[in-house]
Image (tube, rainbow, N blue to C red):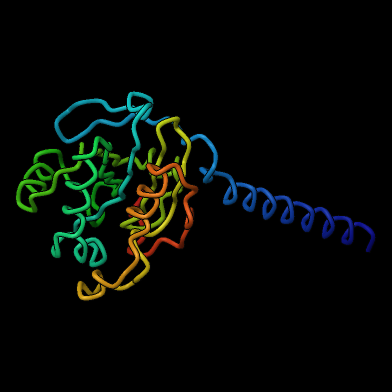
Length: 209
């Protein structure tokens, strides 16, 4: 009986340790107010991009999946393209990040992505191809879209949804509060970001298993 109790206690301790480690793992990651993790990724034109190369600029990271209805909402309405043009014209670096794995929804080759950008008249600074999900996992990107804003000294100042209307309906865009634009406007004006985090909405990022 004592042997059975001892084995049960060991098993419970082991399970508890696993749960604790999982909790630590899920809690660990990029946090607003801390330095944004450095990354290196190849864009759709074959150029290697590093976050550190853009020190001194605001940087927007936009997780993307061209087959996701939530992504389609913002691209077919031209809302995302409008934001890209508006902010890159002000010297802000905007990266579309594609973390879909080969065989998963949203995966594209470099030529396919360039054709998509041309077709949609999109104008990010670059589209980063992340088929292994390294950049996505580094930032704990959960959905498409999932948006991050990094300030000129490399600190994350926004993490969350693109806006306040978590739907696929294009008609909701005009009345939604755009958290990305709000964060940029406030930070550029030297004000604290009033909504530094929000719950991202969209399709789950299609990581490699």
